[in-house]
Length: 358
Ligand code: 5AD
Image 1 (tube, rainbow, N blue to C red):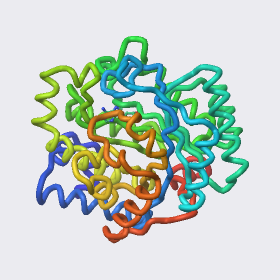
Image 2: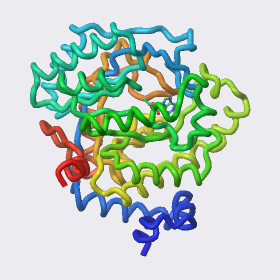
Image 3: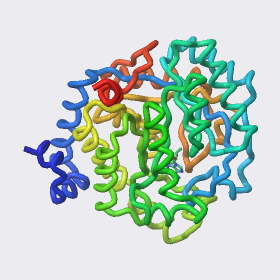
Image 4: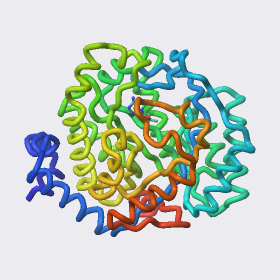
């Protein structure tokens, strides 16, 4: 049985299905869909995402908002702008909000974020609050939790420390990132992680180890996306990588879909989000993910004026639209795909409840 072989981490099977196309791929997709629908049915949970600042202290070699990209104008939304976004989220009846930004660890940033989370929790106590603001210290994470944060997203980017070292400057440490994920678990957050699929230098073995890492470390949620080139980054400037990316992007997107399908078979009751980067490959990229493995989507609530300043990768979709259009567009696409958008529910990870309460 395919399911059993995947669950046993049978190397040959994993490599075969990671690269599957046509009928073989359909077999895998069907298995994933069954696993997902047994837990979630056709339901899709919504989170309004506010990309509130592109100021970043890090210099990841793949990311467009890296500190060293001087072409990038920087912004940070003020409290009034955040409150307007929250009003929209309330009106749209998204059950959760995601606060995402570049990484900053200054006292100024910490006070700002604590204040925003506190206000959100007081004004909208029923709203799920997710934070995605990079590596933070234990005490600050604790304060955020006390202020009302429920969940935290921090992608490990790759489970292979050697590959991690090739994609990041030496000041950044895989071990430190991993410790931060463990701290989040200690603090009883719902913890989300993920990787990019299709990174330069990434092998099938790396992807298999990513899947093992996810299972072994008991994460509750996943944000996983395809790597997309950005010209103003060290990777994107390299002509060899440019050529390689153009040649392999379709193939890699296929591997990405297979990777998510296998993850869903391995972990039926975790939350898996359809990453915005999927729509770079196809306007229905995210919907494809939701039909196979994903049960969460995060429509952008970021004001139109800021969208073209939060470009982690090239050809980011929907940067010329506002929160209203993102809302109708996504809801319509979900319905057209025969799925059911769920309003007014936080949509917490069933895996988390099992992990915490048994
Ligand atoms: N392509 C795809 N995803 C990217 N991210 C950053 N840069 C890129 C890129 N060029 C992802 C990282 C990060 C998340 C917020 O965005 O995985 O954790």
